[in-house]
Length: 444
Image (cartoon, rainbow, N blue to C red; front, side, top):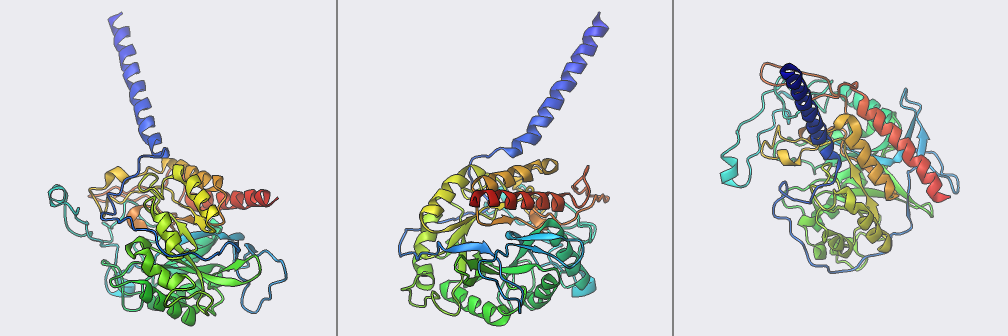
């Protein structure tokens, strides 16, 4: 009897342990309270200025160079003639980074050797390791790329990336961009690589939009200069993305990262018709999409003259903007003010390889269920465009690029098992197709 009781107790303990483990995994599917530990010092700026009506803008993409647009045509879907990709959708955008380097192409590792970023509170920082990763065995990511620690300058890598993006059915890659000679704190200037990205994208019938990053000295005037530079230099390229209005007028579309760092009264000088250096109605007029982090940023975005907002972050609950439960309210605000709302969804989030103190923002992938939950939340608000965070932001573990199992003496990397390296590309395609099926029903 005692032996039977002991076996029953052991069985009950193991069952309880299984239930606990399952609940810990599934908790990442639920929204958590908003917090901003990753972005200290966010200021909630006063609402000023005005906003012009951009309501007529739709989600269609431009025709290829030399190809006329038939009246009333809808080019949001295109059949690729560049291999296995098949149908792609220009209303699915994916964030793309070209800041990686390795000794073979660049003479050294770039970004794969990312530093361990110290916490801004010295007391907390003292509890965590410092230093730098040492590729190729130790990289600044919790996952390991199938292509190994690659260089963004490698033509074979670019070709593989375009093939993978096409396989995902995303039609527009949103290129992380810094002006010539500038880069992030851990990178090297890469603006000279843009023509190669455009050419590679064009070979796969993909389009390229620009994600203007925060850089030292960025303000409304410098962004105006950036837009002129990009349009003058790349605007005639066949892969340059334009967002087409319901009247057939096409305008470039720019995502402005960390837009809240510039006050709305400054943006309004650039983005409203009466601004001192207004772009509106000029050769450089475009669709400008701001980042929403805190709730009151939506008023600043409106006052600044932007045409819409996106949420970027793949960690549900990290910010007001990235919390799925807030998207319905954000969409309603945008609909009421002639703005686009472009929700950003990601497969998960883990940046502890570069921010070891940030474990509380980790979002488990749960074999793809987290991603599908986010995608469903995005479709529920009926957006014009959906953005995927990201194709290859490896540091924050948001990539859908192919990853493989990897184990070294000191590290065991995460992977996509029990699924294969293409799992998140396949999920993206499935949901991109669903998005466009549902959109046809919305229009009816």
